[in-house]
Image 1: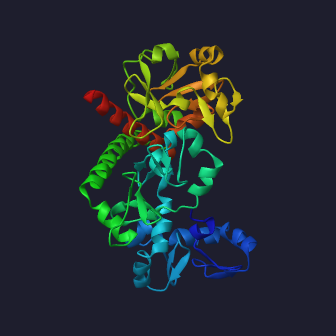
Image 2: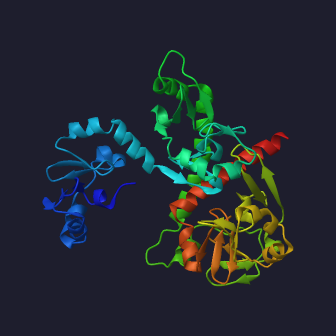
Image 3: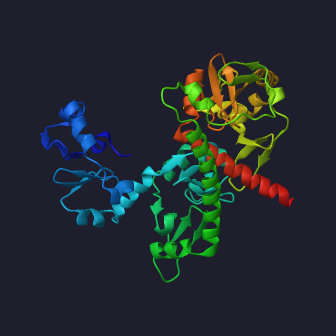
Length: 399
């Protein structure tokens, strides 16, 4: 992650730093923090623009040269900058910025989903990261032993947007989630060859198409909602037309309606073992959310049932979600329909506390949950959901 100092064009050394837009020496961290808060620095930084050729590489034009924010490196000439962007360190630093966490344990890179299994090195019932078999996927990938091993194995950034992990005499493709052993060549060259193969390209193109379709939907919503001087509710209410098939109970002037969950859900069912792994719930053939999210069971530091306002141990989750107490609480939890937001799944789990079904998080206050719907994290969760639903419906048609 790019540091705040780098984003302020601060070239830092072991102890001291130098501001490249103000051209001044800074003795230590405290002086640097004080400096970047000054109006003069902010003015100079704003005047220093990114080089058009290297906008995505975050290389800034400073007074006496060029500065890479991602790597915190200075270059006196543009030629040095061109050489730098192909350097392995820069490629890695740039690539790391493009990862996003998504719903259902998935990760995306440049908006392209990576399955939970692939990210965790799971192929069938074996973890190639830990070199062990397991009985429970969730128990294994959330164990301290697995997480410790996972952080030690770097993701490599190959040609053609390819991602892979280097194993002993082999590599794992994160798109195909398969292990390949090079023959008469090194791992990097073998991985590059693999990324050009038709099977890999078909899988990648399929993921990219699904992600792009969802991004276009999100862009249309965002463009329709742009209007200066509007508060969060009014700005959002201009994004999309409402789903006319859903009747309302409680309506207000902001286009926000409250509906009982019985009236909202016409049909739902759980699915297991999709190509993305994990467990999901399909609602009205339009919405797909993770199983835990459907039951409003979130996890930050601990598992928690947001509806019952109860902290849970992982071993107690299944028993709790199937209990009569929880089922009754679910029935009493209203769904919030936002006229401008289309097929969202927002529930008021406690007074003025709202649960986002796609992201499996809660926010305090209507204004905050409305702002959440426009965040990058939420859009990524929608992309993930759209991809999973698309895959499920394709499989269902073939059955």
